[in-house]
Image 1 (cartoon, rainbow, N blue to C red):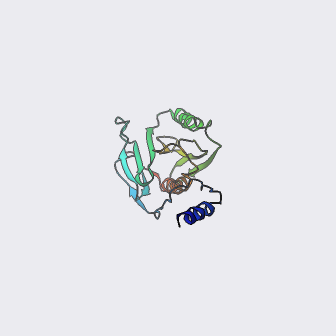
Image 2 (image 1 turned 45 degrees about the vertical axis):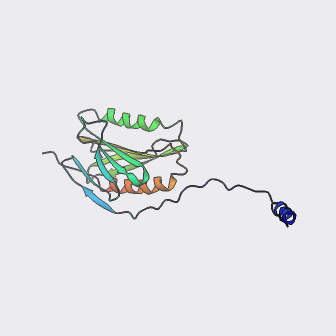
Image 3 (image 1 turned 180 degrees about the vertical axis):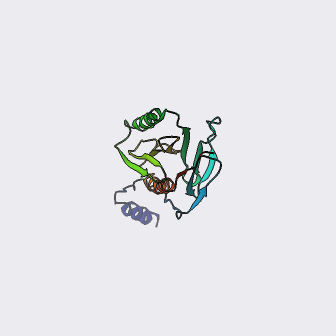
Length: 188
C-alpha cells in the first residue's frame, strides 16, 4: 500500500510549477465627499471628509502652512502660504525648481493652467509621472499681488507610482476639487 501511494505521489507531480507574479493589495476607495475649510487663514477651500488637517510640524514659524493628511493612503498634501511683497518671481521660480528636481525620476511632467479671473486665482498644476517620482502632483496658486500658495502631494512609502496609480488618480481628483473651490480672503 505504501509503495502504491509513493508511485501515485511521484507521478501526480509531473507538471512544472509556475509561480504567480506578486500582486498588490486591493484598495477600497471611499466616495468623494467634501467639507469647507474656513478659518482665520487668508484662504479657504473644500477638502475631503476622509482627510485630516494639521499644522506643518516642520515650520512652526509659518502659521498658514498646513498638511492635508490622507491616513488611509499614507499620503499628505503639503500646503505652504507666502505673502507676496514684490517677490512673486522668486516664489514662481522656487515652485518650478521643486518640480524640475523630479526630472531624473520622471518619465513625463505635464502641466495644466489654473485660471479664474473672477476669484483672482492664477496658477499651474503639475502631474509628474514616473516610477520613482517622490511627488506625483504639485501646484501653485497666486492672485499675483498679495497671496501665493504652493502644494505638493507626498506618500509615506517608497515611491512606486505604478502600484500607487489608483490612489494617485483618486487624490488628484480631490486636489482638482480643492483648487476649483479655492478662494482668497480679503485682507482686513
